[in-house]
Structures are given as structure tokens and as C-alpha cells.
Amino acid sequence: MRQTELNLSEEDRSTIEAIRSKEVHQAREVNRAHVLSCLDRDIPESEIMAVLGIGRTAVWRARAAYLQGGVELAVFDVQRSGRPRQYDTNAEASVIALACSAPPKGRQRWTMVELERCRPPGAWHAIREPGNRSTHAQKNYFSCSWHRVMWCIGALTEEYRARMYVPLELYARPISKAEPVICIDEKSLQLIAHSRPPLAMAASSPTKHGYEYVRNGTTNLFVAVEPKAGQRIVSVTERRGKVDFVAFIKELLTGVYAKARRIHLVLDNLNTHFRKCFDDVLGSRAAAKLLHRVEFHYTPKHASWLNMAEIEIGILSRQCLDRRIANRELLESEVAAWQQARNEKERTIEWHFTRQDADKKMGRNYVSQLSC
Image (cartoon, rainbow, N blue to C red; front, side):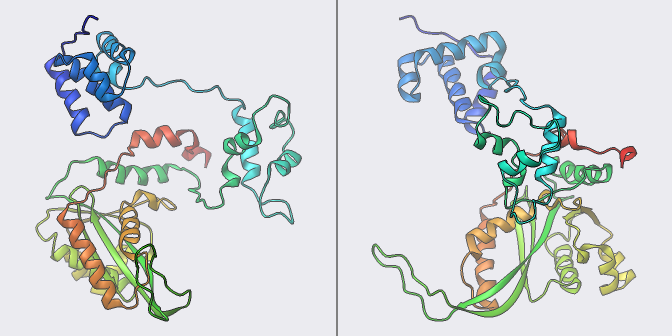
């Protein structure tokens, strides 16, 4: 059978190679990039199909799509309109508002039966009609009341959006040694010791430890991470008061980031994170001298998910802290080893959520200043 021919331009060839080797894409998109690259290098179709595990039709479609619309059409999926909405916006909003309210007296939470019984007039009138979607699908569609573990971000006011855009803009900037972006947060940890020695792991037998334990007090970890540089600093302290926080920031500014021209600190709204604490601890003149290079950027209230330090703390918890640690000395040595290993490998955090994504995802819930 005649070989499918294809000649890529130099620009398209560079784009295809980036998709194949560097960037993060879905498997089917990488496969299509492989097909185009192989056709460009005159590799036989039989070899392409054998190596990639695809049929001849997939090869022909990739070539035809490239000739029709270039790399964009050949590699990436065209966005689809999706399934039509089965409920209008007003009906959906009224049901969701009901599901998010307090459940009936004597009930732990709303159920589909209770929602149908208490629904507002005209809302969700077709919920039980024959041929309508299943109960499971309905629960997924109006899902808020069935999520036992959830958080709520409240009204998306202009103030909320303005404070949200700031860290998103910082995260979109290229890495800069002169103006590093540092995310800071803290985590409390209970020190727990075994009441009796655990049994070591053996062949076909996991480690065993008793359910009883001994509490040895609590401690605190301050975490500062520079996401794009792949560097983090973790400090173990006895408390997380303003004196401890000021000392941690001072160590950052006079140590690792002493040569930076301007330092951007991304923080949540904990009461110890504000500039007044520096004035209280150091005095106004000393605080002004220490912070003259610093810009504080605070996430909106109930939006600490915008602080990438929470991602780093999650990794720290899973990789290092998810066990019984008996004392502060052991905690400090374990955290130091974890920090050193991640810094040596320059483990970065890839942030993909942009301002455009925020407007697209949450735009319909934005509240203007006039309507507040």
C-alpha cells in the first residue's frame, strides 16, 4: 500500500518535538505528535502502528488534520459544546440553595427524597418523571449537599477578585533572582511516641505497632517555598506566635534572600502575618529597615488554596510527617533531611491556574460592587 507522506515546516517540527519531549500533554496528544514526527521522517506506517499500538486510520487522520489545520488541529482535541443543560439556571440555583441550607429537623443532611419533598414551586419539577436521569446522576449534578468534606469561598466580590489576581499574576512571571516569589505558611504537629516498641517488618509481614500512644506535646513548622526555583526552607519552632513568625522571616531576609532587590511574600490572613506584628516585636524603625525590600501579598479570605505553600506542606506531610514522631530533635533531623533532598533535586511546583482560568471557572458567580 502507498506510504502516507508528510513534510513538516521547521516551526511545526520544533513544536512537535516540544510536545513529544518537554511539555505536559495527554497521552493521545503525544501519540499524534509521534505520528506526525514519524511521517515527517519517512518511517513506514507499519512500524508506526506497531510501536504506538494504533491503526492505519489514526495515521491517516493525523496527516489529514495537519494538512487541513496544522499542528493545532492535528494534535489537540477540538473543544466540544457538551451536553445541553437539562435544567435552567434559576431552577438549578433554587435547588442548590435548598441543598446548601440546613437539613430538615431530625436529618443529618439532605437526601434526594427530602429535596423533592421540600423543593420550591416550579423548581426541579421533572426529577421523578419516567425517562429522566438516574438518582445517582442527579446527585452528581446537584452535588453540593452530598459532599461531606467541603469548603466554601463565599461571595466573589471585587475585593476578592483583586486579591486573587495578585498571586496569579506573580505565579505567571518568569523566575527572577532579583525579585523572588516566596509562599509562606505554617503547620502545627503533635509529637507522638509509641507506648511499646513496634514490631519490625519481616518477609510477608508489615510493620506492626500498637494502637496506644504517648503524647509529647505539640510543635510548629514554618514553610517557605520558592516554587519556580525549587527551593524551600522549613523551620521547626515550639510555637507559631508573632515572635516566632518575625524571627523566621528575618532569617529568610538576612540569609538566603539577602541579595534580592525585592521580595514578594505570598501569605494567608492569619493574624500573625501582618506588618503590625513586626512593629510590635522589633519596633517601628527596625521593622521598616528589615522590610524595606518586602512586598506582602495576601490571598483573599477563605482562599488559602491560592498559596502554593499549602501544596508544599501537603507533600511534606505525605513524604515525611505521616508517622509517629516522638520528639522535636527527631522531627528537626527528619525535616532537614527531607528539605535537603528536595532542594538538591530542585523540585519545583507547576502552577497552571491563571487569571483567565479563574474568570472562566468562577465568572458567573462574580458579584459587582453595585449589587453588594
